[in-house]
Length: 150
Image 1 (cartoon, rainbow, N blue to C red):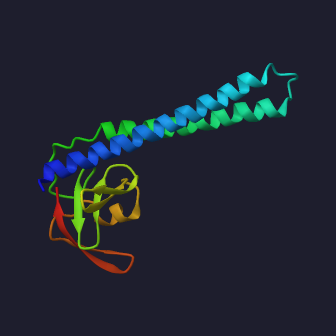
Image 2 (cartoon, helix red, strand yellow):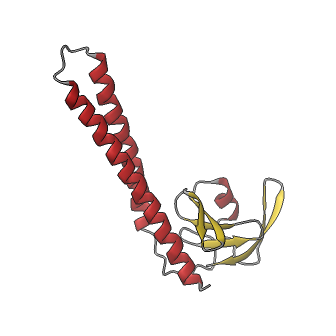
């Protein structure tokens, strides 16, 4: 399969997953707000039930902010760049696994191949950062060879 097509499919799948996460949190946040509204007016300043409902909404708002930042990170990715070395936006094929350096979404299936969307912060990426096709590196006591980078 064409490398550009693989990268585009990986990117599109990541965007789709992330948009779904954002939508789910928005829906949950809206449900928490509706529950607080349906509960009625606060009977006193220390009404614990309504405070819990509002606290839930605020917790979801924080989660939404994190997920929106991750979506923004994905949107900064330029999939047209053909990478020579492991970097943000590259696809790295090793003799152990295939990874897409983007955000941490985990396992992604593209046709019959499994890729792992990883972030720049994970130890696996830190071990192979800047390496090129043909390079080898140690990760958790195992020697791993880079078969391709694009």
